[in-house]
Structure formats: C-alpha cells, structure tokens
Image (tube, rainbow, N blue to C red):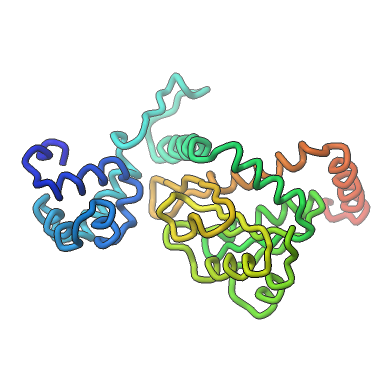
Length: 275
C-alpha cells in the first residue's frame, strides 16, 4: 500500500491514509464505516481492496487485523534492553510484549482530568452498577471485587433481566453506572447507559477507541487498549484501568479504607474461609 500510494486516485489515497494511520480500527470497521472515514463510498472501498489483490473487503479486514496483532511495523518495538530479562522471540514473548504495549496505549489514551473526574463519581456513589456482557464480564467481576472491598455496594450486570433493569432505575443522581464494552458494544450495555442517564445517575464508559459504539454515550469515557497476538482480545488494559480507579479511590482516605479492610480480613480469618 505504501509502495503504490503515488499511483492511487484521490479517494484511494484517502482510504489508504486512514488504514495506515488507524490499522487497529480498520480490522473492525465495515466497508461503509471505512468509506465515511475516507469521505468516499463503500463501493470505492471494495474496489480498492480488490485492486490490492484481495478477493474482497473482508480479506483486507483480516489482513489489517493480522498485521496489527502480529506485525511490528504498526507498533513501536519493545527491545530486549527495555525489559528486565532477555527472552526468546516466541509466542510467550510476543504476547507479553503486546500486553506491555497495550498498557502504554491505555495510559496514552486517557486524560488524567477525565480519570480523576471518574474517581470523583465513584467516591460519591452509594451504589455502583457495572455492566459488562460477554468478554467484558471479567472486567465487571474485577470491579465488583475491588469496589466491594472498599465498601461500595456494587453489582455486576452481564445480561438483561427485570431485576437488573429495576436496580438501574433505582439509582440516585450521585450513584454510578460503569459500562464496559468494546468494538460494537452489546445492546444490553448501551441500553443500561440510556436507562441510567434517564434517572440522573452518573455514567462512565470503558471502551477501546473513539469509534466504539459506546464512546461518547456516557458522561465520561475511559479508553483501554485490547490488542492481542491471537484470536481473543487482551483484557490487561481494561483490568488495569479498573484497578487504577480502585487504587485512586483508596488513596483519598487510606485510614478509613484500611480500617474496613482489616475488619473484613479479620472476619474471614475467623470463619476459616482461607484455611
């Protein structure tokens, strides 16, 4: 694509620029969505893919995903001297290095002011509902674990049910709904944000990029990179982001939270749950 750039038409150059600059996103955009980014038509996108030797646009999408996940050209390289140990370039190394880069991307994508505002919402909330269907359920479970330890009444919602909808409609203006979703967000997640907003509750979205359906739907949006070297997304970024929220909340009143944590752990020891 880079080699043939000068021979492309104006529309093809616009598409090529977007693909090169947004390789991560291209692999998940439809032809219509990519056409909008390049200010052209979906038929032009399909013909462009074919001109590059692909049978159609889906093959170009797959190549973009593979290039971004497995190729070094699209992302900064982590050299051995940047690590505390030297390891061979195998799938273990590649996976862990990709996670390192995902954490760097997650840090770069978030403004500290927005993050701190999210912590403010968390601190004020009497109740927290974390919505995370499918792969996001792991992130929601971690949020419940951490926030409950800090004394926040927290519910994880991974599917649509009357009980969960009722819980959302009972949220108060200072309460918080955290919606976790990536790429094309689950309808349950989008609906939860709308319902929480309608009753005046605060809302925070955790998603992977500004093209996600969830981005911009909540009061605040935090971003977490989810790239991986294989077929499933890496959740290192969003899990770390949730941990950072809990750590920031804890830092605001360590004595109070330490007192609560000691009481919890004392009861666990007495019950024998850890034996």
